[in-house]
Length: 396
Ligand SMILES: Cc1cc2nc3c(=O)[nH]c(=O)nc-3n(C[C@H](O)[C@H](O)[C@H](O)COP(=O)(O)O)c2cc1C
Image (cartoon, rainbow, N blue to C red; front, side, top):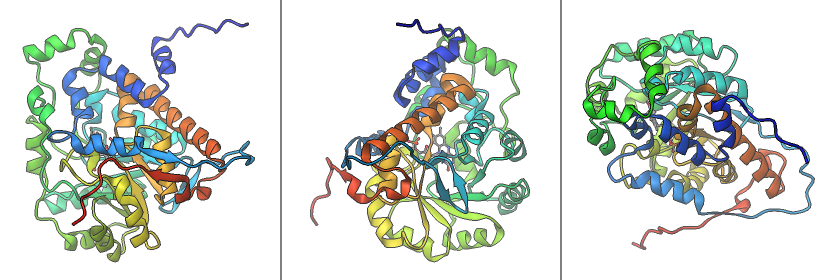
């Protein structure tokens, strides 16, 4: 018997004790003021879209093959003209430094050292150039919201190209802001307003506030200062008139790979594929836009059979475990994106927390692959997974 060496660093100890993304979420919740935690954790309206998406992943049944030599496992894959050491990347998220001040820098550095792509949002809180400096050798992707002001959106596209971003994700599921009721109830604004309620809630979380008040003030990568609610900001910024023609126009401006994020039907998957985009992300924006939206994981097999030969299919929304990622790849997704899974890590412990989130998912992917009897992602097939359905559509 040997005694375990005590871990003296409290953050490290906390993170080491987290064995799942759900564990990181619990730590994040304890350490983050409610308005910021709820902004991240919450979704739109009754939050059914995200609940159903996560449930669909929990309802996977795997079919393992036995007696295979799985001593060595390769979790790397080709995606959008480059490699990734793992079949997932970090999804674009806005206001990230408000959750924890290391924000995008933590995500970009952790992604770079894990050899996976990092995506910076138009609503990111670090500049295009600073993220590139934080992750100089890794892959950086830029997510674009088309603004009412076309010249300004194109200026962003040019900056991203100049800084060496290799892929642009155009998000198409935000013609208007979703109704994030938790934010409304919390009076959530940017930057957080110091009301009596906010101060009271902050008292047990001094570290977050010390951090927030002593580091570089929150500013948007691509916006001027804003002091309204998130919903007001989205409604002012985003253009409800954007159509397929605009997408074709953006495609002409961007020299790298172009991916459309927020596809929710087979017909739209087909329509954008016909425009010649390099990839699509099946996503309902983590349940933050339309509530009761299609479950991306359920949509996956029919989209794969319709356009799987013609474009690269990515998926997100509801991923909380490496097993969810393995199941998505088995059903034909080339790649996956994680939003909250990384943000829970960030709020639980900054860059070390993001590294821990990636490590948890990576261990789960590797173990699931071994237990399924496969040694590379290419060996995963639809025969490895059954989607058990609770919610089946009524026959029409
Ligand atoms: C706090 C937060 C902010 C987000 N901001 C953006 C954004 O600025 N642009 C975007 O395209 N998607 C945004 N998303 C959606 C993510 O890119 C991704 O689609 C979603 O988080 C996937 O679901 P998951 O959180 O269950 O992994 C955001 C998601 C969260 C949780």
